[in-house]
Length: 149
Ligand SMILES: Cc1cc2nc3c(=O)[nH]c(=O)nc-3n(C[C@H](O)[C@H](O)[C@H](O)COP(=O)(O)OP(=O)(O)OC[C@H]3O[C@@H](n4cnc5c(N)ncnc54)[C@H](O)[C@@H]3O)c2cc1C
Image (tube, rainbow, N blue to C red; front, side, top):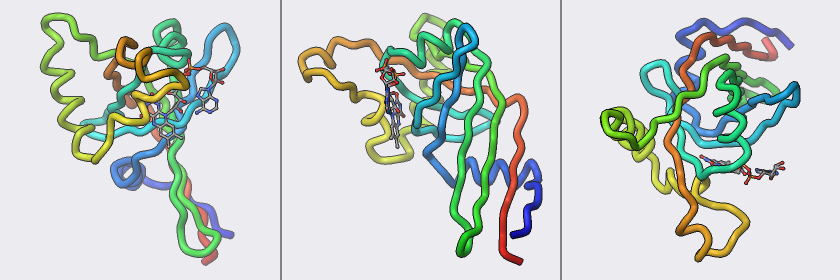
């Protein structure tokens, strides 16, 4: 296997071409990781979620990491790791433009809202659970590709 580093542009292309990432956050020295759907645009990963552990933890410590990968030919693969900062797109007056932008970017995919709106609870409960739009502002990105040649 041959391993090479991806350029920043290649990393950006991989982030744009994919939707599923693993979002890692940490609080009090304890890491936590969860899969999530994102949409990549203008150096940010946009996402939607109900309130819960990851939002609580990212509010307490906004420094996060995201990993995204894709299969290559045969046993080949590409992987990108983002270092970034959690930014909540609140519904407060003055933040409408940012939330509208998140909506626009995310809604390019069908059913974009569904995973972020599902919890192990009854539908009656779900209707009343608050949700948030957020984005990960990318501060650093690295990528690697493994191929047979
Ligand atoms: C492909 C895919 C895409 C997804 N996209 C989104 C998305 O866009 N937005 C979104 O909010 N969620 C998405 N999810 C669900 C997400 O992974 C979490 O399950 C969900 O967001 C709840 O996370 P939370 O931190 O709020 O957990 P909480 O509901 O607060 O629960 C916390 C507890 O449940 C456990 N737990 C939570 N989630 C999982 C899990 N996935 N697997 C195992 N244990 C778990 C934790 O270990 C923790 O102890 C997606 C899941 C998958 C597989």
